Length: 478
Image 1 (tube, rainbow, N blue to C red):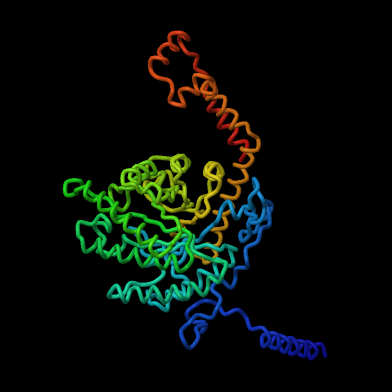
Image 2 (cartoon, rainbow, N blue to C red):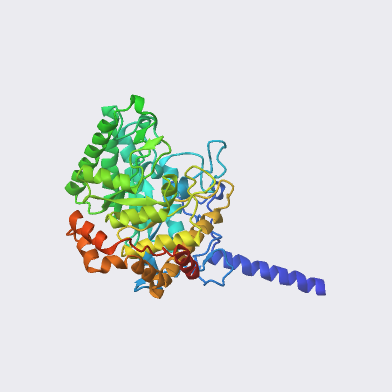
């Protein structure tokens, strides 16, 4: 009798489950064999079926798929966190990163990938991108033209491929999402082995101009807020076969033509140069923030560009990220930040997610002193480690990076509100708040006047810099 009741119970449960399935079918997983593609080949499934929308749960949460420090609408120093940070997902690392390195084959093949670089596959990746943005709660993304759509056999075919994918991106963006910035990939194809704007071949220069023209148009069409120039091949391997002066002149003419075209089509986004000292070239012309600022001044482009500072590039040039940000800021050129970091034991561009709270705090001090970054923001130019191969790792990396910068914002705000560090700095320079100090800063103190003062005052007293106290104050805010 008990066996019969148990059998009837199983039958009833099976019937109920079938009814529920009929009413609300399960999520279609985003893998090639799942049959989620429609007859047209367009993807209709969910790319991240096991990942919920990421929510803020606070510092005590142990949930790896939740924010602990990033609370988008919380106000810090009179501005919402999301407006201070303006986060963006980098399409290339997130959806085109394979885990390959100079010594090893790819380790990542996401479930939705079919192994091709077709337009259909490009459109599938674009759908994955917007689902990813939605689940992270973000409304900005960044792209290289050749990462979102494949090269064709001609410029016309390549542009047609790009137009098809961009049309889908425009549809998926809706009214709330837009690119933080777009750019042209002028470093991967063999035609650019000697550079693009600095190539010794005029035909390559013309091809690069055509590619950038199209990329600016696409960025403008998608409502992009900025456009980036990163000259990965704009430099040299040896000066023996290089006319550096001529190459720099050519690069300046290229930028001037880009500015003219931007104005012609009514694109109001900010042009950004991204400094990097080397890799892949031995020497890159936009070595660091100071070098880039000097280039812009020399060629009368200083009012047309700002800088996109990448933290890993800063360390490659022998600087801290804080140094590069401050150099850009005090020159009125801080426009955007590529949020990543390198490994201090490795001498190349590892593009890791920024996880260092102290560095994040220093970064946010510069951002706050700059009044924010808008229309720029923080782009996660960061990739998973080669050994991180789960789809959820894509979310974990971004969540951790967002939380780190949010925690840095909180710590920087605490430093500013406490006022102790600012007071330490003020006291260090207080001798310039005197009458003679004001004359020096106003350019009204000549050498004769200063010599007279030096004789009158005698040997000057030099106060302690209080570096350890400054470091203690920083640590107390973390």
